[in-house]
Image (cartoon, rainbow, N blue to C red; front, top):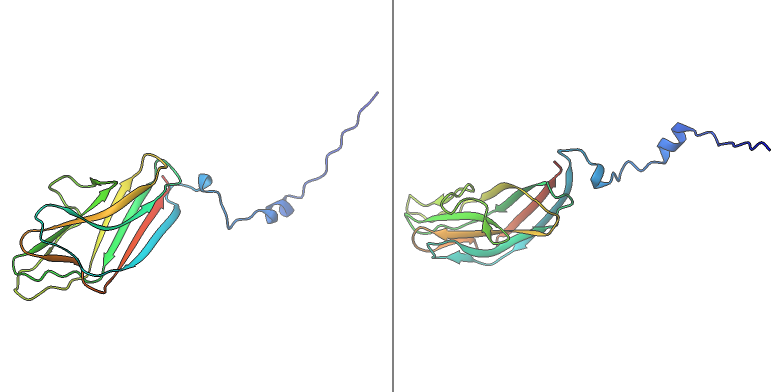
Length: 169
């Protein structure tokens, strides 16, 4: 007995037009691709300290990485900080799940210094890059301190813009 098997012809152009190119699975995204963006705008009152050691601002954002080896770009913008006292400096730092991304004495995010005697109302951004090692949620929180006197990370009524971006590696 002879068995004949036939298979239908495939029209490659037709099959390609059926693919949904707007939704590439994140597992297939090449290195350098943005896998996700998490953002939030916070309307806040005064966020202040007189502490000479880093304290939490309770301002932060969480992300659950899609891949265990992704880079997370941190971009936090404070449109109006306030450094009212001459000689006073506001020193911010980013903490990941309660641990400083920089060393204990290094603040790659910079600082704001008042040297001219008039209150300073600068806009500034805190930016950093972190590499995750798992797909568990991580939270990036801003901590800050003062070198002398009171400093305000956020002025009353200002909007803070927080963005976390996951980049495939």
